[in-house]
Length: 230
Image 1 (cartoon, rainbow, N blue to C red):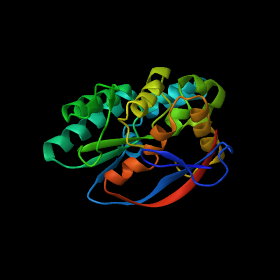
Image 2: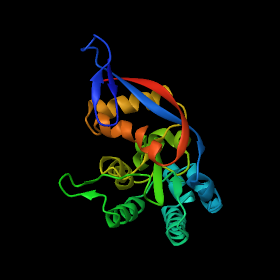
Image 3: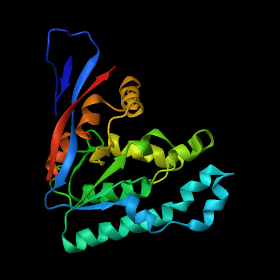
């Protein structure tokens, strides 16, 4: 079995061919000197109740009950206030390309862009604004409403394919600090294994945003182990 560390992967037993990764991930317990903003709760305040009657026949309408426009306005207000007040914040959860673009510009101004790899090498103890993405916003997108219907009525809603791709961009460009997973249920674990097997995300890259990035943002946590087969 191989264990993933921040900058290396090493064998931890004599079985070098079992196709298993041991992954430490963080079950966040508390926050120290970081203001947490929950996009789910903030979007509930913007709920467009007038659209609910259309959802039964057209489930994809659900995405506009908690609209991208409202989410972006919330994000921009939080972002601008944090910079103005010099307050360190973490926003859970984002779902939009525009939010990733704002963070990329900000992190570039902080000199975190590495031109040699065209990615950001962020010391997450430095930025005033960091973000996480909910694993559900990676797993599902707009086209899944037809099949899944109310099974994916979560907040922020699954967005268009371009927005879903942006959430992966946040990970592969090393801008997103954390993937939020509410318990590692089987489908979430299968999804992570699929990402590794299809090489959509590299192992070191993925485990940084399940574990190591958070240790730089002044969180307290309980570390747990996850075994991923590849």
